[in-house]
Amino acid sequence: SPSRAPHAMNALKEKAKAAADAVAAKASAASEVAMEKARKEAESAKAYVAAKREEIRPKLKAAMDSAEPSLKEFMAHPQMQYLKKNPKAIAAICAILCAVGIPGAASVSALVSLIGPVEMLFPMVMMMVNPVAEVIT
Image (cartoon, rainbow, N blue to C red; front, side, top):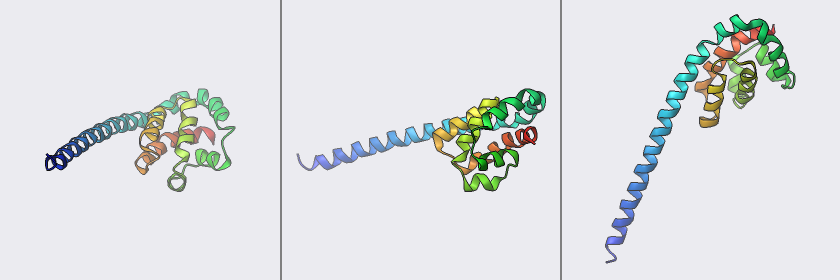
């Protein structure tokens, strides 16, 4: 009967919405787990750089050779303001940090792919870049 059709459509819409909400919740949970993993790894960047300073220096120079000037400036003198003005630069920064083997760089890079260069990633980027800046200067 025609009166049942709208009811059936509403039920389908509700099921679809519930499924979409479940997917969103799983994605959110996955990104929270990834965020925590990245944070823990980024915290170890300082010790990693201290231990491998001389090994890192030539890799860092090679990785930064093709970087644009503003990025080179940021790597040498990291400022949170740069990230706020250039959030898309996080991908390039992570690529340099990955090339040098900095803990957390690959995880943050994956998060950028997953959720974009969002502000909550900035502190982790700074945690990884600050010790690297000491190798540059």
